[in-house]
Length: 354
Image (tube, rainbow, N blue to C red; front, side, top):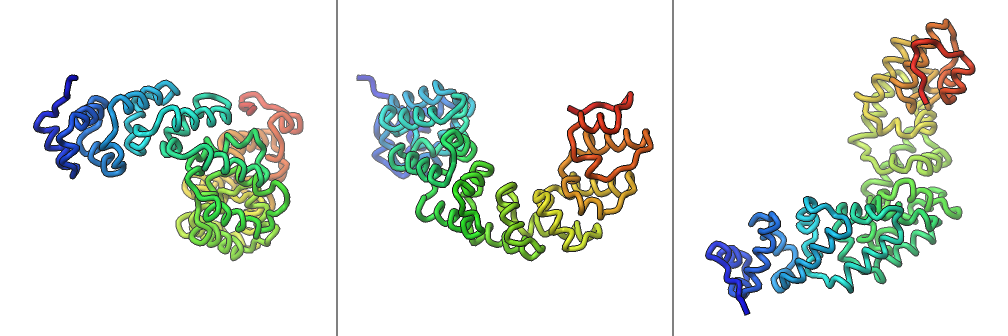
């Protein structure tokens, strides 16, 4: 039997791992060279051994087999070092008892096989969890909330980290919080989860409840809040001081009264999380300085902030101006391009928007 004897540098590195027995075995040399052959530097290798003590006893054959399997399911070879460095435990798992069952179960939820590889690349630790103990109970939990079976895969593949959360201590707390908002009818929380699976990863006390209280302070009623969370749950997940409050301050600076801001937020909740510089300022400037309209019109038609400034607002304004037609913002924007042209007539030189 041929023994692989580590050279002095490799021997010294193995000693730095704090395991003299490891340094003296042929297995040490083979697994360390396994990592080096695949582009890992000493710092990365040391960190992986620190994260996963089971690497010390791993056979090179198992590591190679698992590495090859990850490539075979569509994970790009250039991404494999990232995947393994994040979760080195993957190389130590039994291929047929752990990796294959999880991958095959995920494949049954996917519309495309590539979704499985993408989910593993996003959150490599998903492979270290049990199908029976984690994934199946999680899917059952989501179905009980009203998530349609066909949407289960979408949730997992968008946010594979969900599998790492405790149903009892983490997910149930968020469900109770959402139910407390009045979203307690069949399927309502499931719809929120499908729209924004990442909401399940936030802290109720540190993020969701403070954001809720902030929106109440703006003037939103309980019914308004239900509408916001059902249609744009991502707004509830944003930081009050970093994002929501600066946007509120900007709207007030524009001249909107608090009652108008409450109406705008209810009609178009993302206004609280849109970029001031790239989204809100250009729209307000065009509304007031170019179109010559009052800000009250935007308060009466919050969807003004939703439409593309270049493709929709500017092009339609140009057509109306050239035809010397006056109309409200809602008449101008609250229809698709075909109905708009039928109503106001097309004009040569003005691009049509599909």
